[in-house]
Image (cartoon, rainbow, N blue to C red; front, top):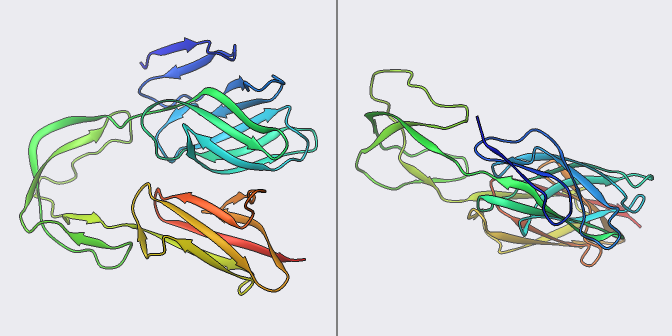
Length: 265
């Protein structure tokens, strides 16, 4: 069973830190802001990059927009809403970051940046060897997709392993398994304008594939009397930054589709 430690932290809230497995209990934290009234809860409180965390809270400015979310200093994809009563709800996606305990900062258009210390524990993949029998890998090239390229022409011997605490791997055949030896040369970024023709989106840097962790800046140039209503990143709603409403910064963590939604004045 995973060991749990209780840490009272600077905010006075009890924080459960679970090592080796994702925590399932929500942890309610108080922001370190001067008001001391803004709260947020996160479920789960630990996991790997890509984990979707459900967020709840109270004490926010009624109906304000959430303009930015960071986890451990890294920008996060999010879909958060504050209702007329000042209640916060929605979800955030944990970005790529080193393992360890991370603070989550949620920035409201009126409430400002609210820091929730020790809000999420980033876990590290743990591998364990299941057998000393090797698998012989063959060489092939996968056509299509994000772009794969052959790294070597020699067979590679690997052991059979599983991710400890995860879904696990099991051997399905006693015969040698032939796989491709390749590397992913990058991830695609698709940008869509909705309605079509309302704007042109510049991207920097501009290329077909991006490296994992690379930052990309999108700048929208609306046509005629159109304006940007909101961004949609892999299906998640994201309001424009009030300071730079036509600019969006992304950190590449896989294939991403961005839709820029526009309206007429």
